[in-house]
Image (cartoon, rainbow, N blue to C red; front, side):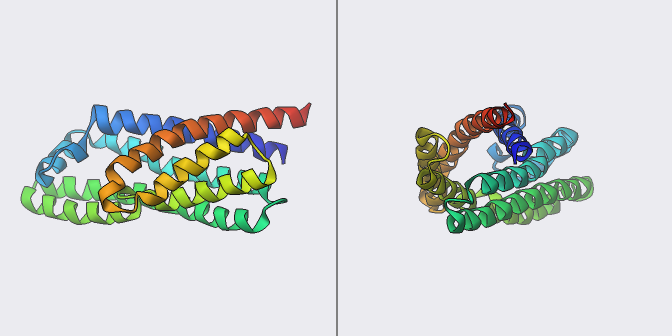
Length: 219
């Protein structure tokens, strides 16, 4: 139990760090989404393929693996007083982790495919990338509903059981609701950023709390 809580705390801190790395990498270093023309998007990917490949591994694939650890650690912590809610939340958490991992893999394979095609037929490469990007948007890019449901249910369970800080749980409720509402296209743009920034704070706060509790248990 104590070791799992420690692992969960480390996982939570990684999730926050990966969010920050992703924001810097995807927005400040190589902003593919900021380019409207799909052919130019592919050209930008071709110029930064290795960087983007590593970034997707960090932000998607490894993030999803750590999410599995965190979801199981929180299940272990909260299952006694709110078993039904936590079971449902954990299913959503594991499903979210799988979606993120698959998205990262599709992203990297898709990039390599269109970059190889770009040298032969740039227009076709742009068309293929539009298709891949639409699939990625449906999986993990256009809204944060799955993660929002997980966070809302976990925070609700923690409030009922008295686990974790009430302020942390209230923050989780607000951020979770924002993620769920981001499924509305007109609100997705702003709420995805609210969800991401809120999750950074929540993950850091949670990670510190879990590491502290694991040290207290050891003492």
